[in-house]
Length: 101
Image (cartoon, rainbow, N blue to C red; front, side):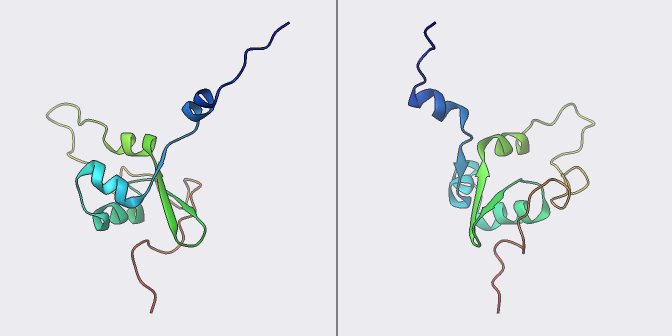
């Protein structure tokens, strides 16, 4: 039997889109500092590639932007609602954006 041929487009569609902190800030129209704060508090999931490079998946941005439901719902996502970075499987090390002296 003939197996369907995989294309580069199929592979690209299955891979998660990773964005830089600057790209996330641009898309959300906020500062890079604010994005780094969201990452440090665990409100926005991110992955560290190497010792300095941080990337954010598009699906994690989408999760951050879920709409507030109803008039009685709390506005935003506070630290109590955010996943704990220590238990989420991410290892983002020291706080992003802080310079070591």
